[in-house]
Image (cartoon, rainbow, N blue to C red; front, side, top):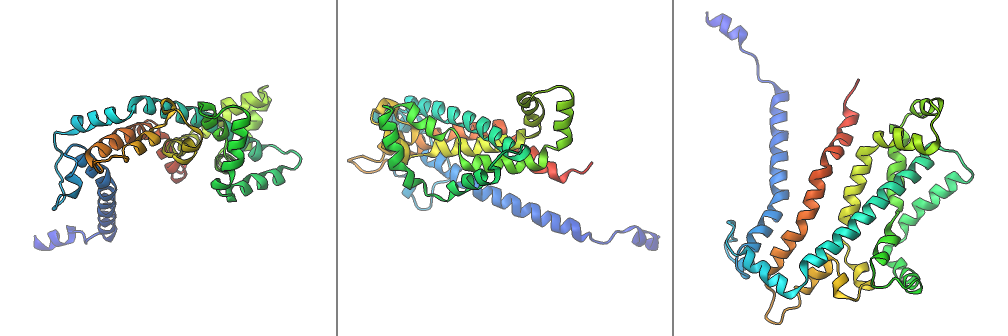
Amino acid sequence: MSTVAAKKRKPDDPGLVSKTLFNLVLIIGALLSIFPFYWMFVVATNEKNAAFEMPPLLVPGMEFFNNFQRVLERTDFFQSLLNSIIVASAVTVSVVFLCTLAGYAFAKYEFPLKKTLFVFVIATMLVPAQLSVLPQYVIMAKLHWIDSYKALIVPAMVNAFGIFWMRQYISSAVHPELLEAGRIDGGGHFRIFWNIAIPVVTPAMATLGILNFMNVWNDFFWPLVVLKNKEHYTIQLALQQLFTNKDGLDFGMIMSATFTATLPLLIVFLLFSRWVIAGLTSGAIKS
């Protein structure tokens, strides 16, 4: 009887052990990534000196609304939040559409100077953003766009990284047979792009949208240069106002505002994450 049981007993699976260790490392990494956000929430819900407590506080308090009330007294927080939502949304929609359109053209069409133009687009990525601030400001001033949404939206409506990203993805994801089938069916160029290419490249568009939304949302320098009226301030400029306090820094107030300003980014990521994950995992699925 014991001999039969010994035969049925399976040896330890080294693959199972390695998979368990890998999952454990991922869990630890996820917890370490989430902890700064959690600690920001803890400080936001406690008194202003909670950030300097030893040992550090790890339990949320009951002061969030009191801290946030002081934010509203110092800044027009919700107006700035709305300004950032308008600017970031407008820029993201335009970047995703225009970069997808340009990437599609570079990937699937032949036209004069195609390679030269694409190299020029890539070369613009080598130019530091700080070098373009002065000429860009002069252009905005001549157009009388200083202190307006247009100064934030129009210069950012398309970017080189987005064109490069979409061109690379479309080159491998959109097969020529699909486009040829659309032409045989009588579709025009834009109809083929809209009905055939876009559904295929939605994961790449979602990824580009998330990255661009975060980039515009976190932009501080350019809004600081072109915005004068506090009613037009973006959320980053509003947060900067909280650091000018005669009585010292109120970290409870600052963290409550920062936590609230981070929520739209989390919402955007949750809304589009399934397309991003689909794009990341599609290459691992074999038919």
